[in-house]
Amino acid sequence: MRPRPPSLRVKKRYVLTEIVPPWISPDVRSLSTTVHEAITSLWGDASTALMQPAVVYAEPGIAILRCRRGTERNLITALSTVVMENEQPIALHPQATSGTILSLKKRCEYLRQKIRVENIVWRGKNCTAYRFRGHKVDLLERGIKGQNVIFFTDDDCEEM
Amino acid sequence: MKLTDACIHPYPGGNSSVRRMLKEACELGFDSCIVIHDGPLPAAEITALRGWIISEDSVKAVLARMRNVPSGIDLVMVEARDAAFNRGALSLRGIDILRGISRAPPKSFDHVCARLGAQHQIAIDLNLYPLLHERGGARQEVIRRYEDLIQLCRRFKFPLTISSDAGSILDQRSVREISSLCSLFGMHAWEVTQALATPGEITNRKGPVEVVQ
Image (cartoon, rainbow over all chains, first blue to last red; front, top):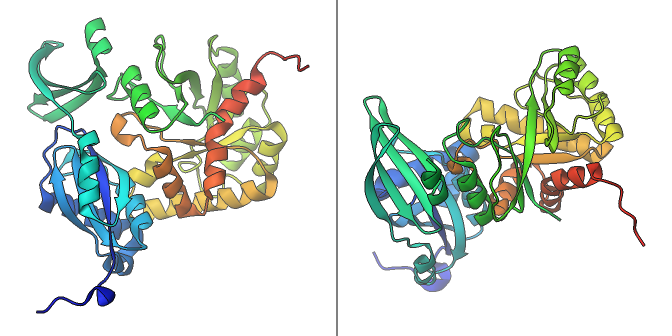
């Protein structure tokens, strides 16, 4: 099928989103399902269809989403209501909106974080500690009943 | 104008430490937070105010609890119940915020409560936690109640506060996100800013008298 001329194409907007915690590796398909569910739940089927949301890019800590121009505010509102992805608690914080993916990828540099992974013992349990920018430490504790994440800073870890 | 998250519950109530929650709040655009925490509050980039929640079934029990409020508490909050309780609580001195309207029985906050809130300058809290975590009918009910509350607020001019009620950094939202969430029940951006500044105004009001020259 021949692409439409620019004047007939539907205008799109791209939303750069920060994924918290940044050490989660998001799968584009499951993230897309989560976002669709959140938008449909908040705005309904008709608005979601008009919005045409899609996840176009994802890496640990960052995702770029697409929607129809004029609906980006509704998309941002719906992204605030995302609390769970693949049975893992997450949060999506929209950072910027643009008309091109390229300009958002330039901004990704500020969101990329160097994450240091360590194995530590906390309260007699083996935990994985993720250390990253801003003296932040996320402790991931795996048990029989599932995993539990505790969010600390370096100062808290020193005090304990 | 200080933008304040009106309620956060750090570790051990939640899964994030006080320092981490204050750090995240700073990055999300807040100037201060009301922290529900028994231990000492650390020095951080933003101001941490100490809050105290009273959750009782009768006004008499609330009065008894208010006599035992520890020193160093910046703001006292009371959990909303039925209409009679809310009217009684909004007439008490020493209460700063009435919270939990979304969990209270239907029609528990009416025009009489609104008038009392405006008269005694007691703020009503809009809790964003159910907007994020509820789905379907439960969330629709919360949006409907908050819309009703906003209409009463515009008519009677009682103060509003906005809280994330977060026990984790994953439930904290930025000022911009809060603004878009509040637009769901018809709140304008300037009303959101005003509501986020209310806790700062309450603490200023409670401070010592200043001589203005």
